[in-house]
Image 1 (cartoon, one colour):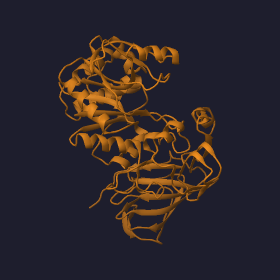
Image 2: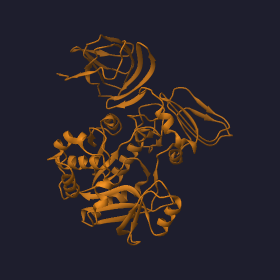
Image 3: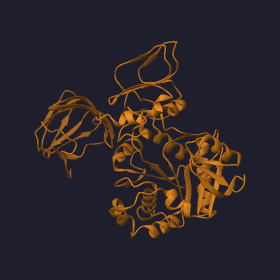
Image 4: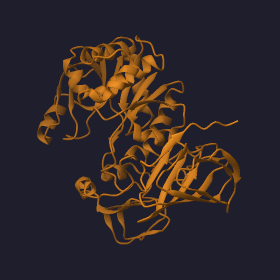
Length: 449
């Protein structure tokens, strides 16, 4: 089966663990199965993120599933870091809402991956908290679309309460698979209850179609020839959702009911409900604590005493201590914080900023075995690397040399350099200059023998 996972959004509501390049789906808080490979960082050893959990669940249900993630350029490194290089990625040059993203991903599947026009694909969010039965239902949804049940086949979630956060699908019958009568926007609680009484289902943003259907609709709305052309023109496209561009204009729509567990983990309150443990990382609580959850990415302990209904989160970005219900109102406060990225996962490993001064920055860099940084230079800063663990090789202006713990490597501004990890390699990088910026980087092709 073909699956497109939509991975968008920024990290506002789950600050300080998330930021503009580390969205909620990359936070490692779910206990991994015992036979899984341990994580790289100490705090998350034995844990997995939402995207890792969803990818593992898909492969459990269908080991041959073709998985493509539609995402922004800023998330590509984290995806490669957490899922490896086998997953397909449809990169959005800029954010243009769900219809352009889905149109681009569909063109990617056909023109780059070679998926046939008559083959079906399921589109779903990357971050629901679900169990394997959800992906068994996803496979059934794909089969319904492949069989031509309707031009669009949606998954409708059986509501557990009259939610005001979701739109509603009203089917024509209570059958397991039924035609759709109408859609309703997010209601108030009283109206939501009326929809539920009438057999309404939550719209979880999951749907299936044949590639030819969405590509036809895309060509009707956008002037493009193929994937490459659409990619180049992407920033000129109107921002419009898939619902407005496609769903509202389609008469032949079916919906399949899903009655299993399904949670949208959009806030700290809902996220902690899905945590299997009350604490991740070095956290101590006294016996008087009730309904307290804490996640600690820092190298110092957190001690909580006598707290009730509280979430605590600590990372290099900051520290949050909040009443769980109040935590859903975090966004405007985070918007007012102007801070550089202090932690990020890259395709080659990760980095964590340790110290920032006016003319210097100190960073701890971890490279995964067999990976390397881009071969690059900086015009406005010098760098010093001190290897603290592992073994590897550096290439400085074309000259290669081995490195081990205790070795110090210096690079003047304008010097081309990279480091290659043979084992997991950790180093302290000190950047020295009056204008230290992420934009001060020029990449080069690395020719190796």
